[in-house]
Amino acid sequence: MDLKRALGIWLAVLSVAAVVGLTGSTLAGHYWYCSGSTPWHYANYNINWYNGGTGDYYNIYNEEAKTDSTAWSPYTDIFLNPVSASGTTDHANAYNGFYGSTGWLGIAELRGVSGCTVLNGRARLNQSYLDNGGYSRTNKKHVACQELGHLFGLGHNRSSTTTCMNDTILSSPTPNTHDRDLINAIY
Amino acid sequence: MITRRTFVTLTFVIAALGLTGAAYIGWEMHAVNAMPSVLSHAAWKVKFEAPSDLARGVDVVILATAVSSRPGRVAFSDNGEDSLPFEEVTFEVARGMKGLKAGKSVVVERAGGVDYEGHNLILDGDGGPFEIGATYLLFLNRQEDGPFYYQVNDQGRYKIEGDRLSAVGEDDDPVAGFFHGRRLADATGLIGDFLGRKPATPPGQ
Image (cartoon, rainbow over all chains, first blue to last red; front, side):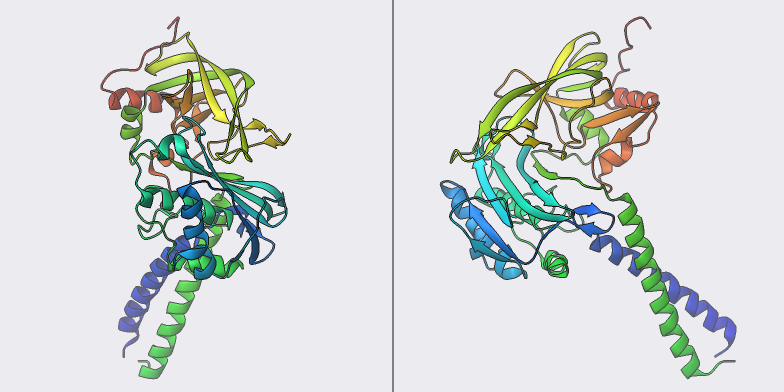
């Protein structure tokens, strides 16, 4: 092969590789970052799980955390250890309530941290909106799934419509393989 | 002339270099842009795909200065264990573009403050506590169940820094990205266009 033709092919290969590499790095950037490229994370994969939900919200949280086939606990390397009371060390605590006209359907908070390690995460679902008749059970599950995903270290992901971490849709109440890979890379 | 073996080998090397180099650059760029130490994330009731949708989809668009903040109500979870405090921030409207006129006061309620357990709860998914004395471009809705207004979402707040807007939303947000870094005069002009009229001028001008 002559050198001129080879150089042309190499330039094309380099361009394609650069595009693929940039795309890949963008897709990987769906963590909830603490500092620089370090995401928030619990101390280890074993997290105390307190479900403070009431009524069907208890079931929804439980399905998204533990019992659905793609629930965070069996689907990823995280192990959620059910506990009977909320706590402040290695705990993920989940609630629902009528929080009023706040603009948000759900919220995830890191209440206690040490460096980038989460000690106490809290998820809330806002019944003031979710119970007003405009939201299906699937929508509620999507929000619950997303808030839990935040607590475990993930940010929003608008690149995919197959994940609950997409905050522009409410119809995909499950993490996807990309979320699982991100979580498993942390824990 | 080069041999087929050399060509194939070098092609793989170049592809690998391109992939790893680009991935590294992308990762570093993201890390630099990532917002540090954010402690809350919200699933908003509504997210807008375009700045024109935001301007048309809210009750109020104002340029306003935060003048005071006070503790507000405390909400509890349905099981009574979890408390969520709110604060009420009063703004003086410097320029009304939709829903309110210049010179009026408006109270914006947001989650945050001292909770029932005595913790100072700083929620920053909406941009965090307002800075008293600072001026913001705000996109607000009226509360359905209360007397105040609320920031529509994380696309609905832009702090005025110099003569430019500073967004609180995420890097890849099309609306926050549109306004972030834009000159205030440009932004208000565009909002006027989105709303089909010129923005109101402040008093005395």
